[in-house]
Amino acid sequence: MSWSRSVLLAAAVVTLCTSSSSRGEIVALAITEVAAGVFVHNGVHAEASPANADAIANIGFIVGDNAVAVIDPGGSAKEGRELRAAIQARTDRPIRYVILTHVHPDHIFGAAAFRDDHPDFIGHGKLPGALAQRGSYYLRRLQDSLGEIAEGTEVVAPTRFVSPRLDLDLGGRRLVLRAHGPAHTDNDLTVFDEKTRTLWLADLLFVDRIPVIDGSLVGWLKELGGLTALSADRAVPGHGPAAVEWPAAVSPEQRYLEAVASGTRAAIQAGIGIANAYRQVANSERGHWLLFDEYHPRNVTTSYKELEWE
Ligand SMILES: [Zn+2]
Image (tube, rainbow, N blue to C red; front, side):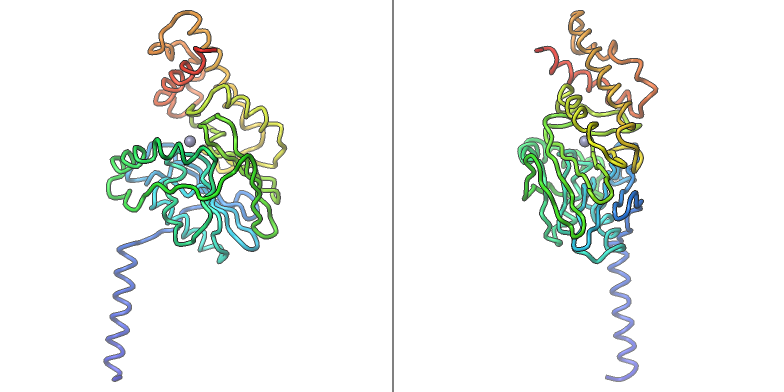
């Protein structure tokens, strides 16, 4: 091969690489190491939009000596790819587990980005039913809000289940996964990293952003009773700062849920209809929460349907 031809070939290879990287540009997600080997991407307090690619929840990963576990792959395939890039920038350990903490799209719609890693996709026993019921609706809604940014996003079903406990050995560190009764949804998981005593609560814990009641209000308060008895050095909420003190950080959420429970029971007893009940319930909580007006009315409607048969 002549010198000039090899130069031309090299130039062609460079051009190819450049054009493919600009076409599918993947920027690693910003992450914080909240404890040794425990990484969190802090979601923004907003609704899904093309600008945020549905990166609105706290998601992340834990690195062991032999393997990586992803705890929620993110809100879109794009966020999933960016999380995967952040993992690969920090470790060459294989991604063996992708934990899907519950059915909500902002937490799990990034799963397709991890298919090539062939991980176990781990979920609650009730997750497949919830995905069958809502998965395609959630996907259409994401496509409507994100447009072409949603490209590649798919509903990925779990391949392995937690019932009620599953231990994962990452090599030199064990994760304890627990499946909870109906609370935030009817398919919530939590993860405890024994090595750093980090309790990853996903959406069983909201900080700053108003909690969304999509499972059972009574059940959620009951699950919190059990969880607050666990001792941990820190907690990772599903929305809010990347890490918070446990159990101190759960107090506002407990107070809000209790206010919704007592206020809704009072509205039912007073004969106030379901459509108007939210106006009377837990108004003292307005001002304590982001997105209060967006979510509080439907929290009260959901709770009304649950509590009116008590
Ligand atoms: Zn959720």
